[in-house]
Length: 328
Ligand SMILES: *[C@@H]1O[C@H](CO)[C@@H](O)[C@H](O)[C@H]1NC(C)=O
Image (cartoon, rainbow, N blue to C red; front, top):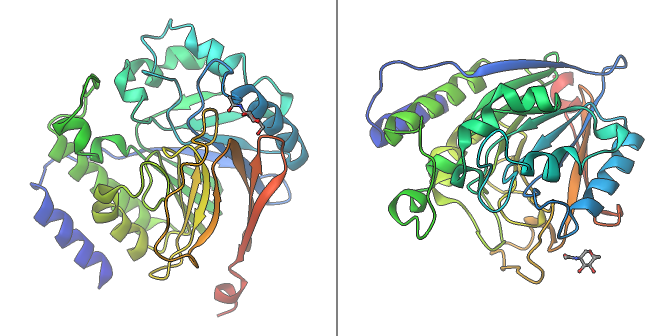
């Protein structure tokens, strides 16, 4: 029943569109013992400033310890205004020359943030960057199947959902090439995400986007995502929603569903003291108003998440197991 309700909702909100381009799919093998581990960092590219280099150093140490398979970036890769082109030195100064630890020489799976949309979006998506640094893989929206069939990651381009960037862009100029007409773009994207979620047979379903769905940070909840994306996450029993955008580390659980909302947006400048109140304190498991990052270790039956501060100290741990559902 639920999926039908969701489809109807989307059709009511957006004009029905015709051609739906399928999301590109990637595969990443788990380790020989069947486990998988990765780091998540967001909101980082500041040429090493604002503790970006310190966070990178600790990522290198933890990455080594966990023998990570890859790294996820939740976007806002280059401040303040994305990349100017494929030859923008910020690519080296904020990425290649910063994340130099041996353990970080893995594939990076990257989405775009709103600041990236203020630059040349095509540049970040360009295979030319991949030639300069083979770790780099940035697409608007895509699917990663890890395991295989252990975890499926649904990377969603969230910036075009946010109406204020279109209606009231202030002094900023956004690169909407490839996005317009916006309604068609969003409608197609939601249909693609829904069909991929519906068909997924992975043990763990993880959705990654730049913008928050739930957050007590400066930006707070992104109501467009709460309206359009969250119902899909609930209907298809997504385990984790991972985002950046608010420059903090945060874990919010929810009474309405089993989804855990994880913010890893502490890659460089963090909003010290910028903490809102959350109406249900029991849902708020962590709010850290400083820099840091997150790690995920998983097997077919268990997920372990940790958040680290700028010194590499563990701030918060969370685990879940799906053994019960397997036994049925
Ligand atoms: C970097 O981290 C240290 C330790 O938390 C903090 O004292 C300092 O203010 C941070 N620097 C910046 C620029 O955020």
